[in-house]
Image (tube, rainbow, N blue to C red; front, side, top):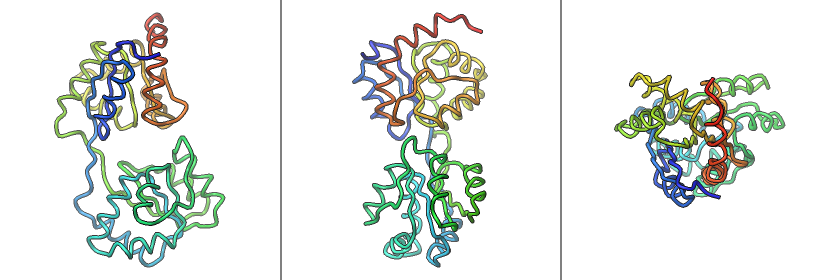
Length: 278
């Protein structure tokens, strides 16, 4: 089964070209509107203060949330310290990787992860993994936004937690495609909307609010369009807006998401559009 010509909208940014190719390969008509821009913090005082603690051996365990974040962290630190010093400091620590992407960057540095968090790779799986460990001086390489509930749960274990945020998420410089995405969703000029990260929904609704169409976008996603979500964190973000995903893949990966959407979108669309609007 495939999309059979359904109009598929994605808000993917970093892998926009790949997303478009996957939709086409699965028989869909894609419209990909980049919705997120990752900007490393231009001033690295926080990183350098954190690095001083790292080099002094103040942390026993590090949680790496993203491969991109680890790359930015490395590049920032080598402006003040040697790469060898950074690698040696990490080698002395227990390293927890949220999924495979940090593992790939660690491999480039000649390092291995002590613990790799299994799917769905959320912080909810990290907490019990750390609870089973003796280390309690913990640092977290965050990404895009802070996760205070994650920190609170680690502190409840008796941990001393230090976070370092390497980059932030902003709207793209060119919001034209994102505004067009808002219009297509609100006017029902697409059939399927694919979400791979919660910030996509945040930015979609932010731009929709600016256009005065946020309510229309929510109603379209609730009532008329098939919503495909990559996994639990995305599901929770949708739920906060009163939107229930129609399709969630067995594994929280982009390719499995697109494939699941291609297989299930037709029946899901027929079912959704046959239900009277509430």
